[in-house]
Length: 142
Image 1: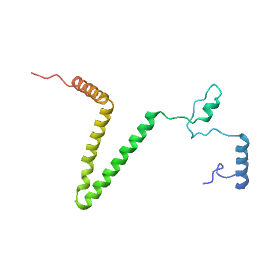
Image 2: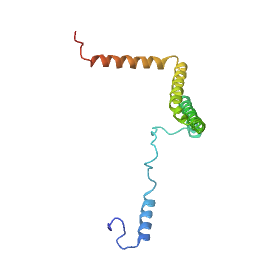
Image 3: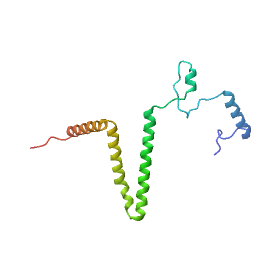
Image 4: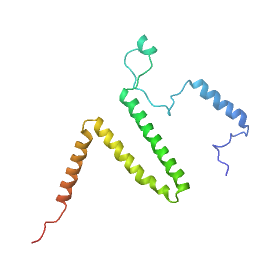
């Protein structure tokens, strides 16, 4: 199927592309739609802000590094269980219990560093779930 939009009317595709390219170039620079937008400042940037690069918050950097550390240990754990399964058949299935143990350890460590805030939040969620479950239960008959 030959659609009119696919080919130039006179059949000279090279000149058609040159005309399109020239039209785009003469229109000036366009906004990059794939680039994330930055908020425009109402005032002109100062010389100090133009020189110094934007700094990420320390918590974002630490969170990214901690996540990559966890990913690294999970991959090491998987490789170790696969290597063990070469010697002991079926040992590859030990990855899941080991992963659960590592996850519990990671949650324990996060809770210890956050001074109990995580446990308090989990307790609150459990209490809310219990209240919801009690609301939806029919009354017991005697």
